[in-house]
Length: 219
Length: 182
Length: 131
Image (tube, rainbow over all chains, first blue to last red; front, side):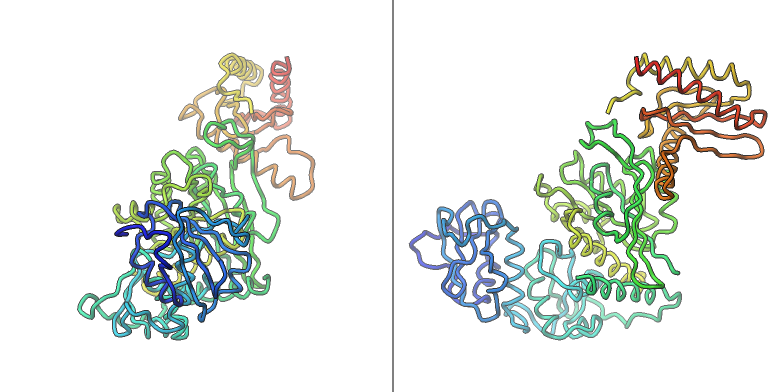
């Protein structure tokens, strides 16, 4: 719960990298913020503005090109929306999109401070991928984690994803409702999946591979 | 050629026909008739039999997309088409009167598909009506014990990328279910 | 679109025309007139569920027939016929109006006679609408 709104002249609420950004927002409940705007600067230049009341943000046209693991991220609070020309006329997106993107960057392929590589993780809910940056590996990981708890190493093995891909995904997912980090006693380690007697899993797997290839070719 | 049938269901006006048009790589076969229920959905026509589209993956595989009419009076078409379906996409328009009831209704009507395959839900028209949020759908279905790791996304049926994401999530979910049926 | 099924005078007129058709065609067992989107305007004979189910099926079949016509490059569909050993079902589009008439005849009726009689009934109703 947000304790109190910062004042405009209190200085930046975030001044660091994406880890600082994500750590700050992890401690907030955005929808309960009564108002105000957060102006996000990347490497010294205005890049986005978060409108809490509406749970949306605007971003500069080159925002996607500008984001990277090494950004200096500064966030300043404002009572009023920014009139910065970079944001004029820009599309409005859900804040979840920004927080997710930030979390993908923040760990740079390793677990964020609140995650433990020796624990298992589970997702009670799928990420709303339509509004989040995603790829097929993430869809695969979400599918596995919503079925049963997995450690990062198991998730990597089952989805043939790299450790970097797994941790970036887990970092982002850890900010979602329904994400759980489980102690060893809280879940049963499941045996590897049984052989596919009716060939159905293989058939669907083949279908997915073909569809992936087909989409890639068409793009 | 093995066929993989995906069904698209949901209430009238949810965007089923549009979704199939977005996904299909062949001209969509539509069966539209003049709509006399403009009080329910303000559009001139409505699907009265099915929509049919295809995604041709290669020489041996294709995905067949069938959209069913949304009105209960055409449920005989639902029974015909669900028999061959691998998975189901339920689309529900967020500005309908009782979106939760609509999702529950279609999940129940097509329970045979979700039991043997997979199910995803796409919430349309969230740009026109933001509430309920996707998290509200999830909470509601979780309370009823119905969600069980089911993907629920906000989608624009006119957006091919959205629909592809939904389709991929459906197939991946089916695969996971096949690997571990219980 | 005009909701013909909610126009009670029109519905009555259609009912009378179906009865008149049954007098001309003794082999007529049941009949229904529906809107293109499957709502029943009027019925004749012993049809369960007030003809609602048959009405929806008529709408679907008519639309599927039009889709096939379009696929094969044929002009607009005029009627659809189902044949069996003990009777035939004919579905006729009602001119330019979004309405369809479906009639079931027993084995005594030839298809040609059935179509002729139905076309006559359709013309009568279309003239009423046109007025």
